[in-house]
Image (cartoon, rainbow over all chains, first blue to last red; front, side, top):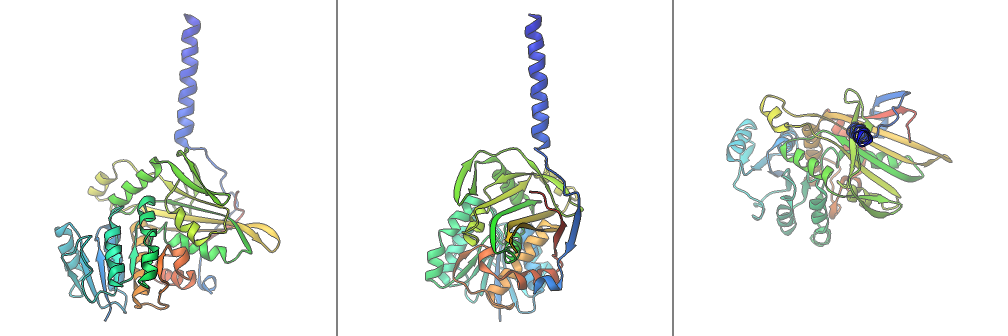
Length: 45
Length: 329
C-alpha cells in the first residue's frame, strides 16, 4: 500500500511538471546578439 | 470621383474607413454594418463624406462603388465578394480564418473571368507580413523556408478567430506538400520590443496564401499567440485594443551561403490591419498609385509589389523593422 501511495505521488509530481512545461511552452533560444532597425528609404528602393 | 463601400465598422473597419477618408483620391465612403447604433456613430464621426447605407451580405453592390472593403467576422465575406465579382468591382478583404480563406480562393476563376482583382487576408498577418516576406525573399537566390508569427488581435471577432485557429488541427506546408497534424504546444517567438518574447502555436491560418505566393518554397509555417482571457471584459473597461506584433523569417541561399532575413512590426493590431486594408483598397480603386489590377483572388504576397506598399504604410505610421544580428535557426 505504501509503495502504491508513493507511486501515485511520483506520478502526480511528474504530471504537474509536465503540465507546467506545456503551459510555459517549449521555449527557444533568445537572439542574444543584435537588435531591430526600422526600415527606411533605402530599404524601399 | 472614387467611392468605397466599407462593410463592417468594427475595430478594423473603422480604422480602414478613417485611413480611406484621409486618402486624397477617395471622395466618398459608404458604410454598412449590422449594428445600426455603431454605424450611425461612425458615419457621424467621419463627416459629410461618409454615409451610412442599408447593405447586408448577399445584397447586390450599390451603383457607382469603385471598391468594396470588408472587415467582417470569419466566414461572412463570401457573399459580399461574390456580389462584388458579379458587379465587376474590386474587393479588399480582411478575412483571416483558414476555411473562409479557402472559400474565397475558390472564387479565383470567377474573378479572373470577370477581370476583377480581389485581395484577401489584408491585415497585419496575414497581409503586411506577406508583403514583408515578398520583400525579404527578393534578396535570396533560393528561398527554403518562410516562418510567420503574430501576437495580437483587433476586436472580439479577431479574438474568436485566433482562439479557433489555435484549437483545430493544423495544416502546414512541409517539404512541398500539405501535412495535417494536431496542435502542438507553444514555443517562444521573439518580436520587436516592447512586445519581446511571446508563446505562439503553429496554426493553419493563412498558410495557403503564402503557398500561393511562394509555390517553390519547401516549408512555410504560421504561428499565432494566445489572446488574453476575458478580452471582451477588458475592452469594456477601457482596454481599447491590444498592441500586436508580427514577425517573418525568410531562410534561403544567397552569395553561396545559407542565410536568414527577419522583419518585424509592432503596432496596435487594429491600426496596422486597418491601414493595410485601406492602402490595398485605395490602390485597387486607383485612388493610390500604382494601381492594383491583377485579376483573380490573391493574398498580398502575390497581389502587390511590396516596396511601394511598405513605403505607403510607413508614411501612415505603420513601420516595419529588420532584425540585425545572429538569427537562431
